[in-house]
Length: 292
Ligand code: C2E
Ligand code: MG
Ligand code: MG
Ligand code: MG
Image 1: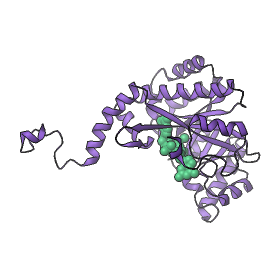
Image 2: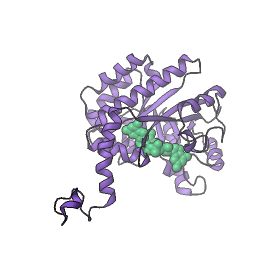
Image 3: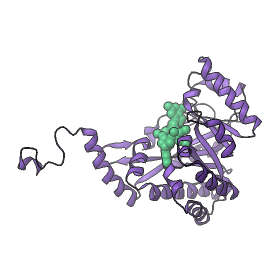
Image 4: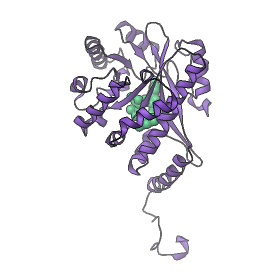
């Protein structure tokens, strides 16, 4: 239609508007539909105890399979969801799915593990977020101690006192709080005090190149030592190589997560790992594509 009208005057998309803007506009509408139709799903990545290699948790990671664009990364669609006001609905859906899945695994008789769910900053601006979480736990029947909420430092920065209060209430319910991407934010260290996390997840950027990169190695070592003193569990994110694995064990990093063990995988594939109960390097599925 725009073409018929000529002179670009009535075109919705002018030739100077780039493909990414077009894509974004389309995606926002498609995302709304995907949320309504519940077409966004979760993959699960195992979290491993460094000493025993037992599976202690799973991180739920959202995926959207778009009919034309293929798999859209959560970095992209979570931002879209935030910009278009869909994040609260989507966040609730995903939390429900994750809790229900974990309860299902328990009911199937597997050893209980913690399910970790990523939260967006905006979700914490809802006055009733604590009630919402409580209701979802009640509805799915999952005990609070098997849920962990992951928040990034950037999430917290914006509204620290308000978020700290809500986290306190969630913690009092028995839910664990993890600081995600630890070390990349503005006041990482003070958050250890104000947010009283049960877990910190050392950002992948510090794990890369361990032990070759001396600075990264020292930073990771310091975070591990500090966490130990403060009785906070510490997880290394993005462990990819046997060298990183060996070194992280040596410096007593409690837990690990990364492609060395498994990429994020569909729930059925995760059950195969749950059956074994352990996850040695290369136990899991190493190509995410196989799960679609
Ligand atoms: P994150 O929470 O820090 O999640 C870890 C990311 O690192 C995941 O990317 C995971 O697939 C990837 N990863 C895990 N192990 C390795 C590794 O060994 N090497 C490398 N290179 N990457 C690894 P993903 O799934 O693309 O998610 C990206 C981010 O999107 C997440 O970072 C999280 O901030 C956000 N996100 C994902 N799902 C959700 C969700 O349900 N809600 C919200 N609010 N955010 C989500
Ligand atoms: Mg995370
Ligand atoms: Mg992270
Ligand atoms: Mg992240």
